Length: 360
Ligand SMILES: Cc1cc2nc3c(=O)[nH]c(=O)nc-3n(C[C@H](O)[C@H](O)[C@H](O)COP(=O)(O)OP(=O)(O)OC[C@H]3O[C@@H](n4cnc5c(N)ncnc54)[C@H](O)[C@@H]3O)c2cc1C
Image 1 (cartoon, rainbow, N blue to C red):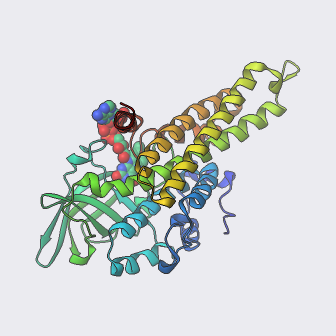
Image 2 (image 1 turned 30 degrees about the vertical axis):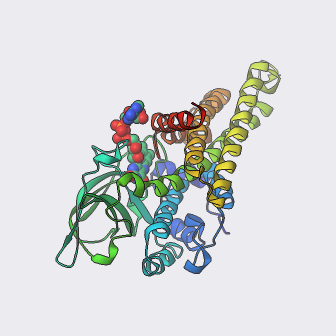
Image 3 (image 1 turned 60 degrees about the vertical axis):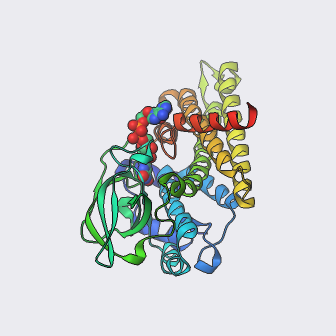
């Protein structure tokens, strides 16, 4: 795959500018990088979760914003694969591996951690559908061709595929996000958006928790691998700095307290990688516990990334304390990983359920 554009220098520039050049995303999309698990029959590379994880970590080590878009596009594709009819898969998955981009909208002002509070309404009207609501923090929406929207449908929930250019759709960029600044986060308003009936995916009427589970599971594994990438970037930067910087004539690498930082960074990288590998293997095997292991992977990797990034900034000190520095960007990006795809607290609640089910 040609990922030459994905260099740390470009990632720093995109972060400062708040935008990845759309042609870079189109090129990555055409190579199948953005949703690499789409099977070959639908035009994708058909990677396993494990191989896609390695790719996600590679991208995440260089650019958290592109990795974020990759996660969103992967969730959109996984949702289409899970709930789309064969006709919908054929119609929409090929474009997604051909340069089109997709974002996924669950969250609303009043429904973040608690998705049961989603108020966006999808209704059957006049032989078609009407969608009305307001979504927030939709990653990649600024670049998106389609937005996969989760809303209320009859007594349960439904998922619709909304063309970003449909009349009634407004995409408003969220200014100055803390991190992943070029990921194209946006507020998406849906004002009586009219869609053909076949834009509703299967599973309509099921509770939103059931519809969201496969999307969130894919997203958690993807974010966890992205965190592995962040940790590797921090480990590389901190080790390189400690190996070359001298303070009062002594190389930093010879100070035991700095060595402790490097040891903790290595431990963070190893534990996050191992739990991600386990989660991906279980996804590939469709093991019954893969949903819970995805939560564990996301939780461990996100916490490790946030701690590792803070440690790396400490090792580089002033050399890492400016926008444009790898560790400064990692520090901002990593904090957000503790909020998305199930915050640290939501993951802890889910893991506590698992602990009680298995160990009580
Ligand atoms: C960078 C970024 C990208 C995002 N991308 C997307 C996207 O692509 N699509 C999308 O739909 N959404 C996206 N989101 C939204 C994200 O999913 C929500 O921010 C997240 O679910 C948390 O919701 P909230 O921000 O409303 O926090 P709240 O739900 O208000 O929670 C606030 C705090 O309370 C804690 N909390 C909540 N409930 C409990 C509880 N029961 N017990 C203990 N603690 C609790 C939370 O962990 C959190 O720390 C994104 C957000 C960010 C910041």
